Length: 304
Image 1 (cartoon, one colour):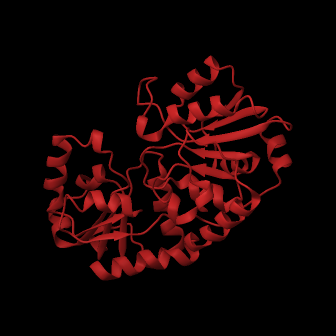
Image 2: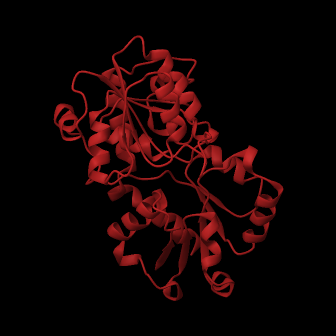
């Protein structure tokens, strides 16, 4: 079996998934779509980069990361229906997304969470990471690494919950000596809110993977305030670096995190105990790509 993987090439998680897949599955990966038995489309909007005649002649599987009902317009529904005729199966990272996709298609839907690469995500000494990143050594550092302003604006991308994240920070700022560590693009809304609330922050916009790993390890807490998610990948990355994390019940949170780490942000305030972080680390081992890649291979074999 040969698999051709098409990512959107937008410096997004999909591109990392594509490169990591090739790294650990080079024997069954091809860079020529004509030689593929299975075409794996990592984003819905890049499917038409492949000629329809080839899609019709091969087996294809499309990843739907998440669906935001409020943004799923009639036009998007029509686009889904049209594209569906060229797709043999769907992959989704969690059961929440599966239930939404099931309303749109009769094609098979396979649930498989994302993976993490253990050679990239592991724990490192907190003090050393803070020193390397020029972060304060004596502050309670809360992390958030994502894109959460709408493109070209300072408006919040509400599905990513930047407003809820900021509400949470404003609630805890008087109980801890707070410093916020931000990563990712388009953080304008959060930065505006932090400045208005006089909350100290450090912003590292374009971090390398090595820097991002240090950023997790520098944190006392990572917060996922999203309303809708496919993953997020941050749950795997925080858990594999032994970083304390709290999250709303989105995406893969309930699959990976200790129940005590899943809270109603910003209504609930919770600082996880070490036992919860240890449980997260234990749970995340299932998603180590060295073993978890077999879950994907089995899916591709079934649709081949």
